[in-house]
Length: 128
Ligand SMILES: [Zn+2]
Image 1 (cartoon, rainbow, N blue to C red):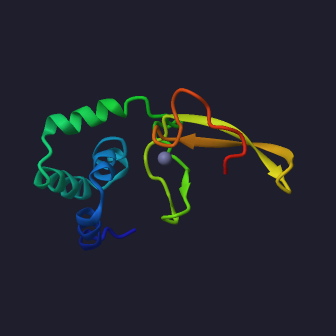
Image 2: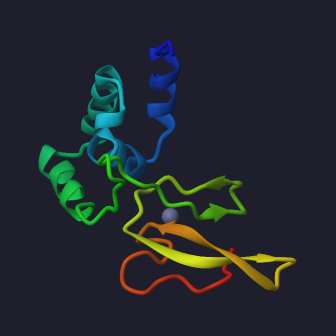
Image 3: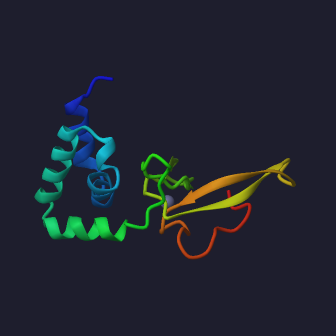
C-alpha cells in the first residue's frame, strides 16, 4: 500500500473535528505516523489544546476492542448520509438476523458508539 500524503491532507482538511480526535487517539496505532502528524496539526490549527485531545482520549476509554487490541467501530448506517458511522464502539449488542424479516436464524453482532445507543442499554432488536 502506498501512502498518499496529499489525499490524506485533503481528507484531514475536510474531516470533522470529532473524527480527527478519534483518529489521533483511538485509531492512532493503525495510522501512518505522518498522517497522525497532519491530523494533530489540523486540530492545533482549529484551536484545540493538547489537554482537550487528552480529554477526548479519556472519554473514549470505554471503547470495545478485539483480542489484538484494535478498536471496533460502530456499524450504524446513516441512511440520509449514505455511509457508516466511524466512531469507536462502546458496546457490542446482539440482534437476530431474520430470514424474510421474520425467522431469527443467526445472532448478529452490533457494535455501537455512544451516539447510536452504545453503552448502557443494548440496542433494540431488529433496528437495522
Ligand atoms: Zn455510531
